[in-house]
Image (cartoon, rainbow, N blue to C red; front, side, top):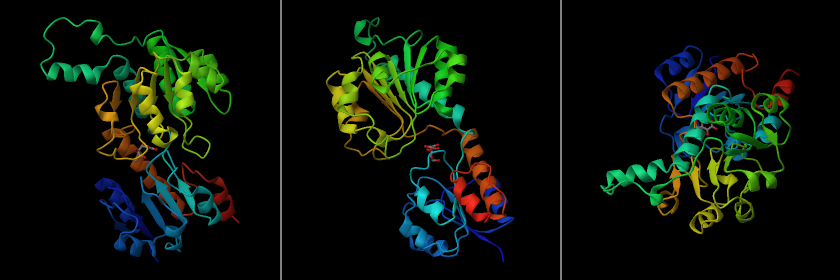
Length: 328
Ligand code: 8YV
């Protein structure tokens, strides 16, 4: 009996062909709600799910009695009930590594764009306001030689720090659950307590996963600890930040600027002040969004689901306990 896959994110034709060689594929490239009746109907038969950016709930899993594995086209898995999936012996796979460098490029581009006011001053030229040599009103901040504070020092955080230390001569500080002696040797990175890093860094770049512990990790108290000349960059998840507190810190000059690729609500609501603030560079969650990397992520997800549904261990498995349990 051919197993069934439900795909809830647009895939390339070559990815669909790989899946269709092995499975019956129910395809929802434009799905915008988990309550879509046709999607729920497909779930009832699905052995595998592949997609991203959809909140998977225990109630939804109750509608998927045959589900064996989910292949997320993402490295972040905060939209999945991981413990519940493990309890149900459902494998959860993700796509680390293939997106690390691209996402780090996004992070460092936000550091540069925020420090040198690239978006604001490009608009200045577009509006025809460049009528004389620039002066202090247009000056930005240096990046080279400054202190980069990494909050979260996993694959993506390390890649951002590598760009700063090796490319821009930056001093790297990090706050992380565990020490990173290899990166201390490679980059001269120094571990700091979270509060110490906030007080010392010229740039604070956030790459932590979203968990109960990191939700609202940044609020009024944290922004108050940062230098008034400091720049805040978030390429993690919007919910890591108390957004009203960030807006207040930016409006009052408690911090100089922010470069943001993620927000508490996405797409960013039309009434959010953030995109209209001169000292904010706001991007539409483009962290991994290049042609090459999104293709590689989808391919990793296809490889994961092919392996998972044929009894092989997926390449990138989030919940090892579910695999162990399925091996009996
Ligand atoms: C994508 C991401 O935006 O991988 C992640 O966790 O946030 C980004 O790569 C997203 O997951 C959709 O693919």
